[in-house]
Amino acid sequence: MTYNGSVAELVKVRIPKQYRCAVALTYDTDMANGYSPLDNPGCHGRTAPFVADYMRQMMDHAERFGTRLHFFKIVNGLEKGCDYSVYQEALARDHDVDCHTYGHLNLAYTNPEKLDVDLRRANLLMQEKLEVKPFVLRGPGGYPPGALGPDSRSVILKNGFRYVSGQGTGGMEYKNNPGDSARDSGAHPPFRFLDGLIEIPFHGLTDRAFLDNIVADDDALTEFRKLYAHKSVPAGWKCTWTVPNALDRLIEIQKSSVDYAYKHRLLLNLVQHPYSHYLHDPGHRHLCELLDHIQSKEDPIWVGTLRGVIREMIEPYNGHKSQ
Image 1: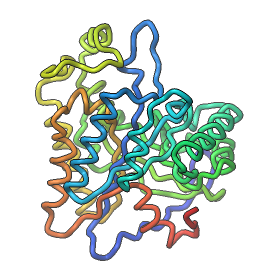
Image 2: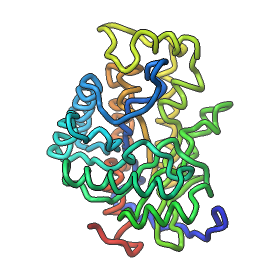
Image 3: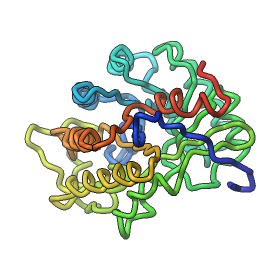
């Protein structure tokens, strides 16, 4: 197989024989540009208290189901004066935390020299503040197959990352028929470039692609930003920019993604955003109903973090060793 002129090969994902398939639950924890002030737009990693509280509730629910979550952190939120205690708590509770770059830079489209500066600063802070060494890097924004070129990959490898999870569009390619995204795990399996970097694409719909784009009323979202940009919403508040059954549709589509991976014995790498679910899903229906669906299957499904997938199903069979 060839990506952007670079030869790559599929990697072995050895799902333990007692499981039918595997589901990785990953969450990008950014304070999103799409919810930011209109007069000062931007995305950053200084996790607001209301998002941190929602993350703690997510961990409570995951632990009740006997699993753990994987949070990807924009690292500028570890600078002096930032409250990053929720990430320390996550690690203490055996959830995983990894790098989402320092400044939310797209891995494929950022100048390699700028990306190098970003990742060096990110690694310094991740190790100093959270004692997390570079392992798997989540790239923001996503990029299509073939976009991550050799210069960008060289920078990523130089900064200690052997795994990257940035290929994907969050489901925007399925905007005319979102249900087709359920087959995404079969279309985009993990692969390795000949320089050694392993890409683990993320699959299917993200909350932001579906709830804030595909079924969103842009004018209503703009009005929300005038009132509540990067702020907590009042108790009982309901999202104003999606159709009433939008969350139901997202949950059903992602259950179908699980069903497809189950049928074909695949790895399903899901990515969502705590801030988005705070707004659209205050009762944590998505996480709880998805985990309940996973546990309802006749044959067990492995469910956990992307680090867990790598260490249990990829590293032992593809020549990389954990740091």
